[in-house]
Length: 276
Image (cartoon, rainbow, N blue to C red; front, side):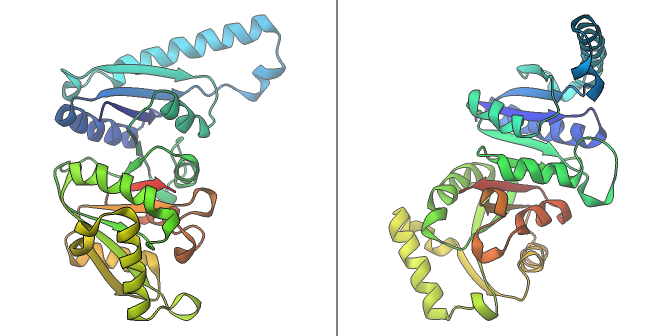
């Protein structure tokens, strides 16, 4: 990984993301790009040019001071750090900047749905999950380790997900000692027989030319995808979760509309998302 982007609002959860990214940067010799969305008041857009310039200059001064304090961390020593300020709080910009700079990963802190202050609430994290074509890592707490023993990636093994699964396996195989590809068989309309699932997986591995992944595939059945993933993670001492997403509709059609966003909000583990 050459470049990692960290969107920050100078909160504690932003610092969790920064410390996680710093550990990754040291291990992979990466540059950190620390991005802050400058929150300008709505009134500034109807103000005169001189008023806009004065408020913008003041906000930039305040933000630069915050950056100085926020980036004064011993764990950043020896790492190339580039602060970046964007003038509008549009979270879609995170992915636009990541694409422009050819970043390998976005690391973002999130409070989930249970808190109500700051930029990176659960709902805002969801927006980045939906828009990001760049792999995204969401963290909720101070990192215990970035040397993951076991990572699980949930996917439906559809042909449309092949590119995203390849990207996930390439990245996560460098971050974890073991990566499991998890398929969840749901009841009712989504139910598939064992033979149907095994044939689907076989076709997928043939398409991706990755027969060596066969031993990494685990098939389970459950009534609810989110509970199935979290239950599997708890039972097997998983260190991080990967999700294959489909933009605005969340994870692929098998998993329903917003399961990836729900899991990002509710999981205590780091969650990686990879867009189809």
